[in-house]
Image (cartoon, rainbow, N blue to C red):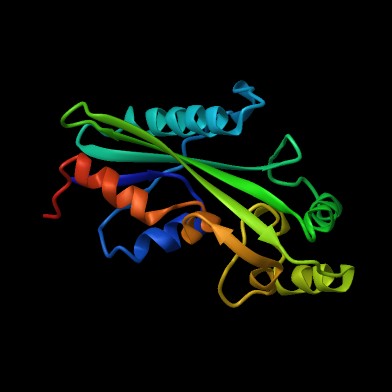
Length: 192
């Protein structure tokens, strides 16, 4: 039984590899602007579903898993920043405060027809950090548009920005493995 992740995210791929399960990745090419919602849970649930469905159309013999993540702060949904300046301002505004990270997971088993959807929510408490620390963050990694939403909890200064996490720490890389394993078990996934 094939597993296909409906994502091209190198972080999700890296996290999923730790399961030591054979899988493939395929981008969904879903236009995310087609879904509008001010409710982060509703938004990630719908986008992860659309991504999984788009890829599942091409694979009749697979379990397809779609993902979507957004941040939520002061009543606003935080999408990926479009520039380094936007990323800097976001990190500055989060300093010393808490925000949420939501990840939707949608799983389709094309062999059985079974479909499961779940949303994982983290509460992230940030310590107070300086503008200089944010600049150091950018010097370590140029992927500002990803790490200003999630955080690399290993080998990166962004790990030091986090004081405490409530929820699954791997959700910070967009794939809460405990949820994925539970869902695969519900799908009766068996390695060949």
